[in-house]
Length: 83
Image (cartoon, rainbow, N blue to C red; front, side):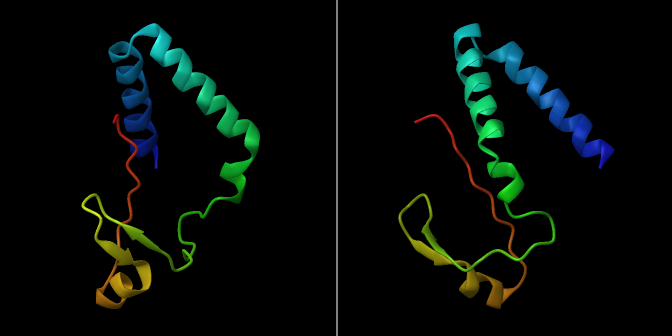
């Protein structure tokens, strides 16, 4: 776990160096609003079972978690990039 925490710390530092100050302020305000919302305490944790859902991939093809789990383990990543 310490390796992950250290890696995340380095990533945060690199982001602060890369982003202009005004963009970093937006990120920090959004992060604080998210923390204050209490959402993290209600989120699914490590080892918890996710509810079944269907979402499209980047090309619009729908995928259902239950169908993917029937094929084997699933790594689920939500990516929020710049667009």
